[in-house]
Length: 255
Length: 259
Image (tube, rainbow over all chains, first blue to last red; front, top):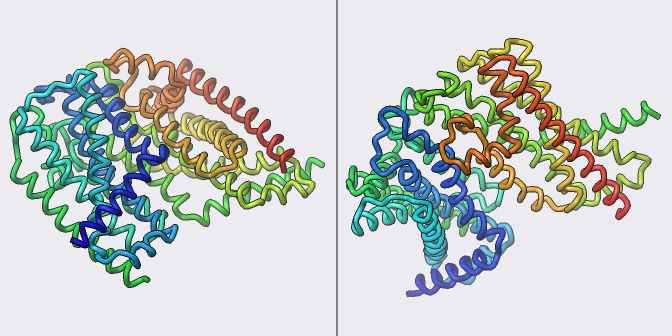
């Protein structure tokens, strides 16, 4: 109960900060749109590469990646806010005031989720407006957005753990870079079968590949790797929740 | 008088380089991130070389031009931020009380950026050669490529200095970064312009000056000596440099007058 109250307070403050500060809000809205335009627009010819077999076309193919990317980076951007809270001393006062500190992590996670939902709505609207095809039914789409939601949760918990351990904005690249690499070492531009050499080997063992392929399957209406993808996303969220809670303990110990 | 001016430029350029070198994040990130993106794109888009009309069978060779532009952007952001910090901490105010000439400050700052830009260009070129890229224009092309890297370092560096001098805020300089990134991504960085299928994207890439900077470097790597690409690339780079220098000089004069 006390954790819920703390979580609600932290989430409200975080969302208030984000939605009243254009310099925080605009990048998280504009960057996914920009990547969508750059990839789906600039690389649409890639659908003509022999062996490219995604039935809905390149715009839909790229939409799934950009949606998952926006979910992951929505979590990371919230992590930047946590680091900023530590730098300004607000987080220390929050640690003193909160009757249940786990609620702090929950609050940041809830804020990241709501923040991403706004991005997802805008991104989806733009994608549909520019002619994205959807082959899946309602259940498939719930599957797609649920996967993205789990990824958002995993990313914010990862970034929280880093922010609470290092407690400085300079930790930004440490939060961002691994997420960037894991995302881009998946089959971003072409299906896995068209990748060659080291990137194919890396993408094959990259857990995000299953999530991305399942997401593309959901959008196309031919779900693939569903249980593996959900298992991977849930495992990441569970592992990073432990990472975040231990980060919270580290911040508590630092005083 | 000229000797004193040269000394001023040398001292300020040295300070600029040393300050950058003392911040590992400012050295490592501009070196590593463009190479990581090159690796990701070269691996992920290798299949694009099978498109009819693609100019080379090696996507690494095609994409090697991109790190040169990205590296210049990163260095520019860092240098602009450092200059903004000089303004915010009052260093520029104290400097304006000395006999230092304003133009020496700008030249010194740009000297530091050029040094970093040259180091980056050498690293990118070495990595490219190490992974099997062979310059179609040979050794002479490598020299031209390095000269071009110096020119764009000056151009983008002056743009960063202009932003810093105009706003006096490191955050404002940093906020330019996404704008630069938009220019980069809406260019011919991932596909030749004639292979971009979407009309509006091809039009944007055609009017985007960054396309010509990339195509200039790319021509030296995969084509050889392409007079048109070189003329357009150097022409665009020169225009950017002259405009940026003019804007930075005007802003510096205003900034020193305010001090």
